[in-house]
Length: 336
Image (cartoon, rainbow, N blue to C red; front, side, top):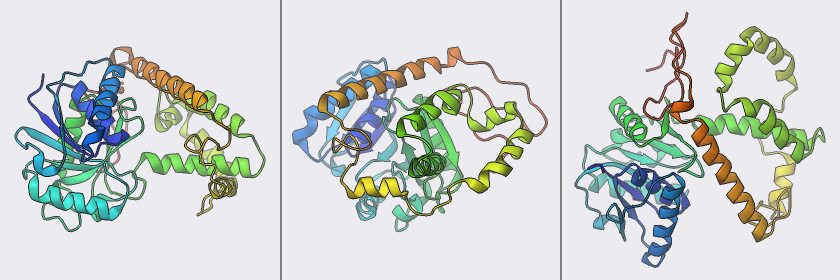
């Protein structure tokens, strides 16, 4: 067991699964959950998530708190905010954290799109604050984006990178807190084209999914897009890009298909109807399948299954393999 401590502010799905990450690593973990009537549900969810990660929840590690003023700050090494995605709510939470959290402790926001620069602008200790963005389901998807705000110190970034590596995550450093950070910018570029393809009648939603899962997306288990193109040849990429880029969608608003679905209240599984109709049984079955596949991918990508670090080459060292204990940053980027 570790003597280190973490505080997670917020007990929704993301907050519970973020807590599970620290608990699985043996950290003393306090979850601020104002609705005490939900505490049993929080405990059950966290225990299940830890179990999915291959661990066991020890009762003396998880501590539920009704409010921030009930938190024991001794031994705390990190605070993660994961409350509702409303700027004024997050700013209010950060104002409290600014006053209450010991000054040596870094504070991260799990916001998926709000910049830490805006969330923490009025805080007096904003230099120890950064975005720390997880992806659903947080306990199964290894990535954490650490985005640097206008006021974030380099030391804060370094500490967050180390902490998340220590608890088995793969942190990536984003040098400015631009909207969407890193992964969502790439993901939304893909989604814009995917919906455009459907708008234009070029392919069905089923074929779009199959093309990604069993085509280029299949390769991403073995290599990210930049490394994959390094093998395929940057000259080949340049030639293909020169002819394809001018034909791609560059709309600055969501696609017609997406607008229509939302206007009709067809939100996907949450409403029982999106591109497909869903029953409760189908949703449960698909969610279980989805999580099982993610677990299998985690095992496949475990450090013991990965190749070693390649030899350095011209322009900088080749990227090392994915490994929780040694998260890698962009090679040769020229950024700090």
